[in-house]
Picture 1 (cartoon, rainbow, N blue to C red):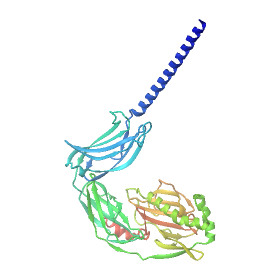
Picture 2 (picture 1 turned 45 degrees about the vertical axis):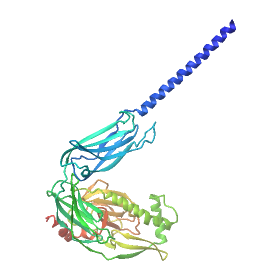
Picture 3 (picture 1 turned 60 degrees about the vertical axis):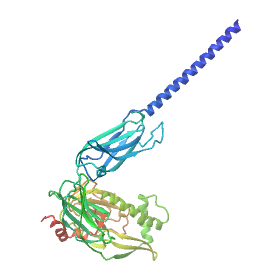
Picture 4 (picture 1 turned 90 degrees about the vertical axis):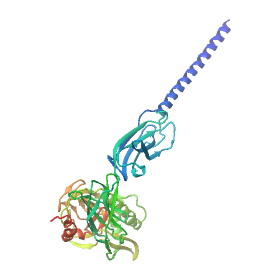
Length: 459
């Protein structure tokens, strides 16, 4: 009897064990199911932010947008245009599913989409633009969570009237130029187009009148096309060509001797700022004169990409007192031990005076760069508005900071030998929308009177 009771007790414990295991497995399965449901059926909607307000459509209109979904990821972006019973799909961008139990699509996107409403066949008048983003959730009957923005827009397919009041007729490589024009209605994108290079225009202060400064690089050839382009807010564009003649500036060549002493003096300075350099002193020098020079050019172009829309300068730009040591567009051959090792172009004017002489702003403007930059050493760039910039480099010290509105002839630093400088001097450059131009025009009051002030009817 005792043995029988013992067997029953053992059987009960075994049964309880399997019940516990079963309950545990059921609990794990339930939790897993809840996790799967939470992951696949998350209910948080994606976000959608439009970069600008759109009220008109007709031609091609740029729409910057940002969308994000930090849970299941983005699955689709669609843009439709509707008018009455007519509905047209302008954009449909689908993202393929990449996973199931983690973000299946991109967590965020930031891009500019081109809306070409003319393809939609919508007539002039009121219409509705709908921008929609979805995520990879299985909510909404497996279609995902959706965020929608609806914009009431006016369809307008009539281009604006653009009239050129003045456009520079004589163009030269390294020269500055400008065009003044009127647009019959509030404009969208407008400016001067030289072949494929676009130079934006800015208000002059007179009704419907705009000015666009443009320039040809030092090595430019005669342009194939020169035109003023103007579009309205709906994206309708008008193109007006203007006739120009081209004068090629004569080549200027120079030779620079690179001595061993120069390398020993300068390379440690560059090593401090650019420790990634490798090789011999000469190899490091060539790295600075080639790769670093190109990187510096990209930085300067980026700094000059967003000019102040207002004209901050007035009359001629001051030239620092001193002797000129090197000119604009000097094509330099660099010699080492009697052998040519490199060729580069000098895109400014070198002016030498006394050591550590005070450097002053050439005209009124806003400081947009004030730090060390490669071959230029300590450098200041001033934005004078509407695409005009001045550059001061090789400074021993900088006495201003980014964001400062400096007046003409205000101290900004002292001359020096930083960067690729063999002796104390100022390297001064003028730029038009990031293109280095000859400073001599901007130093000349007569040139400014004839080419700018008289056109704008200024005294």
